[in-house]
Length: 330
Ligand code: UT7
Image (tube, rainbow, N blue to C red):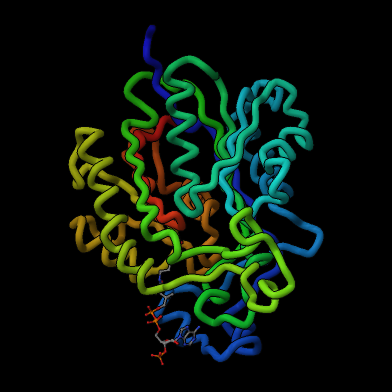
């Protein structure tokens, strides 16, 4: 069997209209714009409107990605949706997207690797294309985190936002596309970032709702310590596997969680901070959507050219981490 090269052939993004600034949060919890900016880098984020759920955000980004890839929905043979805020527990958000977009020839699957989800999705798509199982795969990272935020918990509610990013992954010319992928997980740290109630372990009860266990909770410092190690390590693994060196990297697109985590990764890797694309000041942490949103923006600004080496790298609940290196193919 001839091994093919897989790569991104089109990108689309969507962020909801409603802007929530740090000053808006000053009216909700005991916080300040100054604290949020200096501790995280976030200035504002977007929240979905009450009638929008994750699949709606997915579709807006996916429609753009199809246009950019010049491909019809009937040509998509698999839809992978990375999200930890699905429309429902059942059916999957990918199936809702499949139905609403009329993707008559596609399988559909959700991936829950939280903020690493977009990289997990791209890694699966890479394998499925390379092995000739599928031709065109829609990978979407999307979240409506505003629905699971505890607006009484200043440790978490100020960090996150809503959004979606989609890419079409297909065969690309030899030497281009995804050069390496590296994924990992450390389930020992799972409790550091969790929604305690609502699954089969802790079904929703009025007592659990009273304790606000239906919302996201986080041990911020534990996640921070994990991230400053996992992000550079995973990045370096992927760079080594691609048989290039950090100096060959044109642009790093990291998960947009905290500017201090990205700074630490830049120092550890010896890759100048100017090569790290950041948009977290405008969108906050959008979990599975974060890397794709930043990628879409960097492309729109003309910051990625054919033949350049781009690294995507992230970490998130699970805890999970992952990186991949691409030689941009268009
Ligand atoms: O996608 C993965 C998602 N998660 C992450 O990436 C999170 C990784 N962690 C972080 O980014 C940081 O740990 C945070 C930004 C969440 C917190 O920053 P920190 O420097 O680790 O602060 P901290 O948790 O150590 O808290 C320092 C102080 C505490 O007050 P005391 O105990 O020193 O009096 C907190 O209560 O800051 C307080 N604090 C706040 N103050 C004002 C916590 N949140 C806020 C807030 N406004 N929003």
